[in-house]
Image 1 (cartoon, rainbow, N blue to C red):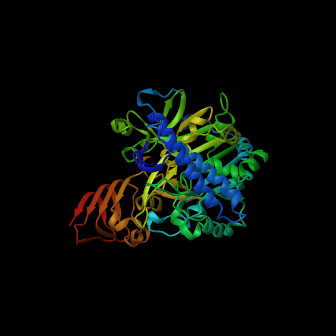
Image 2 (tube, rainbow, N blue to C red):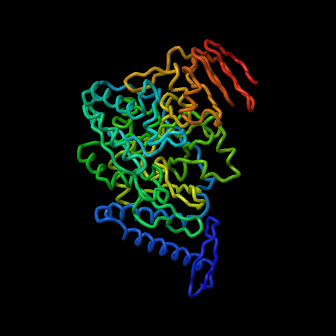
Image 3 (tube, rainbow, N blue to C red):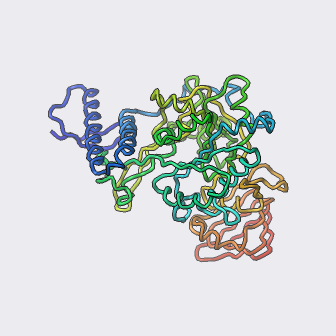
Length: 506
């Protein structure tokens, strides 16, 4: 007998049964078991196409995927009950400026127990670039990876230590990254790389993998990297977690490679290694929410533990509450400091639990697929002694769009050993709000072609540019500037122009 049934996510699935149980609960349980059994059969078939060298690693990854899939089928409704969110305890979020500055000798001692990890799995396609996003040039012909390596080398030389740099790549970025890091061999930095998992995309209709073989390079669209929450399993599976613990390392600092503000900070190190009470196992850097950040994840107290709340977990009727700057003052920068022994423990105990992000996509051939992903910060609730630190905005300088690229390329910042430093001439601690039109500025190549050089932004508060607009040399933008070129028209801002609190249209 063939039955159409809507699963808990409202998708239609087809299952064949010899007998339909009378109770609806039994029926749902049987259809879930059938879906898991069918998936396992498909995964076993996939594994049979792998080479002998591929099999051990792939078996580990597909086992993690199956566990994620089982949770996806079994979980119902939102992961939090809105009314049970508790007020943040007073000591839950430390003020960065209240943290003491440690001595040079103490910093040296702490750095020898640290590992720096950069999440390097993303491509630059959204900004019109080929290859890893970390290869995009940011300043002085240097890319994100160059700047990161400069930061770590400067740290190692300054304190006479050996802080290792670890890159978590994806199958999309690994080859290019491996070729690129060879240029750093003569520098005082030990660079390690490992790959995050590679999971099969599943059809939205059948909930079965669309991949037919384990030849990932031969069918890239059938596979995906499952978000940076996969860090914990992959870090353990590649052997680096054990290796660093054996070296006497105690903490790792995790951040996105495109966040140029995520540098190793002595004051935060001091909080980890010399706490007033006991050492926290998981520290999340948060910063003050602005209008531009209302969709960013925030910290909440729930069931007597700190945890990350993402907008996807919020019931529709409470979205406005979530976006309120008054209700939720902070948002997650994804700069995380995590105790290595605690990572080992939660993995051994199988208590690691992160909310599943269901990412629906349509492939080039029109096929609708589902990607099951997790976020690295969502693991916070699993650890003991979670803590937030309210850091200044200078520790959160991500480059997600060309509007961010405009800021980091400008005279708002100077470059100091791979780190961006806010100009002392800037009168406000916040960065300007910049919106560049997608049709003419979204791709890096086109963005660069529209500026003879990067304008002076020292006194800029807000910039909106829409339409076919170009900028000459030595342009200065101050206050609020809005430039809108009508469809079919073009606006050329002449060299040397000073625009202060101006609206330009035509």
